[in-house]
Length: 365
Image 1 (tube, rainbow, N blue to C red):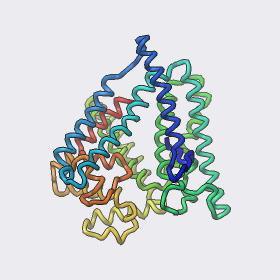
Image 2: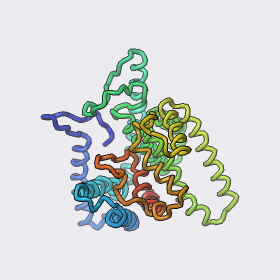
Image 3: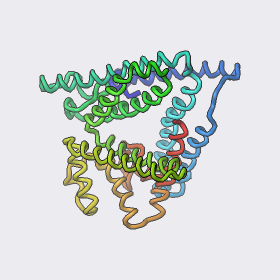
Image 4: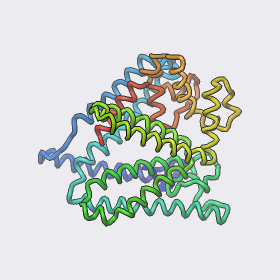
């Protein structure tokens, strides 16, 4: 789904070939599920489904109760459309991770799937570095940015590989790495030892490439992801009352985040964005349009506003947010739609919605 270059333009309509392949795959899989129903082999984790539906149920209630724009005649239908679209889109997350994984992957095909995944990961990353090297040697891009964007910015000195957009490349890199780590856990011990050096190399290359995308939306996702993990960490570890071990792990996590910050601060455009965020935190009335981060205002403004709720102790907004899809408009008529799904959830649904989403994600893992 993230391979943006595999698309064609027919009569000014963009045809996404990867998504067509996904439809074909799902059709074949539905036939497989039907056969499993007949043989009573179909597997379904009810807890995953319960958390997923609970998240969207609270999001729907939040849309009705807390989103002040819902009763605006100019926006109500648009909000319902985007809510339905988001539900359909993120149902794919549930479908692939909670149904496909249980019913398609088994011990017979697991080994070959890992090898294919592992090999393609190296190919995509190496090709991405080749594109960056080509740009630096020739001062032009071998493959230009995705053609349907009305943005002719040069991305040659950023990692994007076959994904067309650095932001999409970062989504692939972090998701792919997490999936590979999960798969690696279940490999035979001898094979683990055999590929261990290559696996560590892939982890290093994936993390380096992730930062080399220089995507601010991805950095926002990384920071929120650390917060996301902390919620689960507190629930899962501190309740076990193993205080010394938990403190040690927490200190290691904080030190790791500090080093991540040092790395991020050295990344050109992202370092400038972080400096601008600090300016806005210290002076909320500063004119964001005069800062470089104005280009990323739709990603930054929701988080800055949410941070302000803590200083003003606005408990309702902290716990329940501003209402589902409120980050899509930010009080204005034009469509905003922040890139980071996690920042949207935090701004729209507060800590409660963020916590329910956490339950779903970790129940899947």
